[in-house]
Image 1 (cartoon, rainbow, N blue to C red):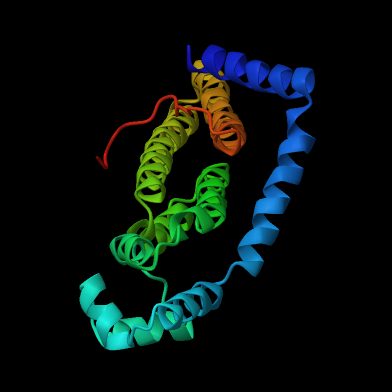
Image 2: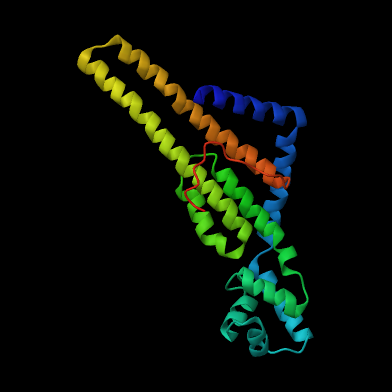
Length: 226
């Protein structure tokens, strides 16, 4: 059943990519987002904050009080030492009358896409590290990160279960010299390979979906993180 589901999913993904020619288009789109991310570093936000603050005749102390943060935090934001959190960024937008969140969308899209691409390989620490460091800056990154991590943990558990079965059957084959154990061992490898394909293509397909602002879904995912 798992094998049939996996093959059907892979077939749908490949046909969709070939029919619409989305792979190369979305690869180019991701490249643009990546380049934008490289140039939109936090010092740029700091420069804008400094410019708007001086334009309104505010001191760093005054801006800090209005944003409900310390003067030191404003100093670090303006110097580019730290990334302003979502709460601070919203306050800066309201007080300085500038949409920082709109400028930050390229940054947000970049990390969300990277999160989904990281699910193509079943290595939980990669999306876990990205999510841990970036979740505080965006609720969307937090949500997408949890979905990716849930999927990665689920796939890891499935892969471990599928890996144990061939080992057990191989042990029985050696101990009892049972030809049926050999057949079962070979067959049990199929779900292992299928899960690998599901993990790879589902990550790729969902990355393409979020680039187009479409809804995504991870099949066989268990919601460990809410």
